[in-house]
Length: 120
Image 1: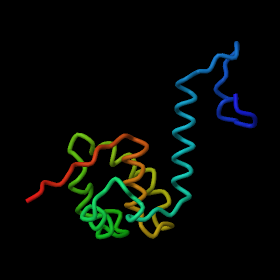
Image 2: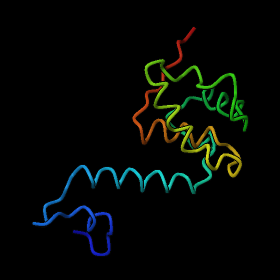
Image 3: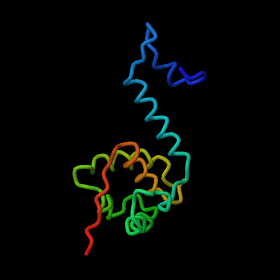
Image 4: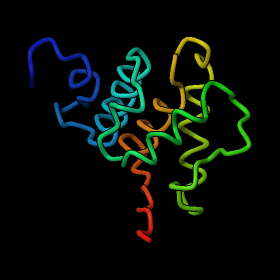
């Protein structure tokens, strides 16, 4: 156990056995809280190509953008995108690039896939 780590202490059961599911849930929530306090921009998203980063910038701050979710989100992952957007929506106006944070949560926290562009 890491000294001073409240996440691990809370996950310990009666016999000092780690409840793995509790530990994973708390770690995921911690990561989401960290992401919510960072001002991530589209340029910080290394898993996107330049065209996709431009698309995120184009979405701007409009929470009800008609181009949401972006075309690089597969149809089967639409629920993951909406879940990430719902988390960020509570603090939407606080961010200069809220869709970048939605994309970060969608990809890194919820395991959302990014469709590769077809080269012409």
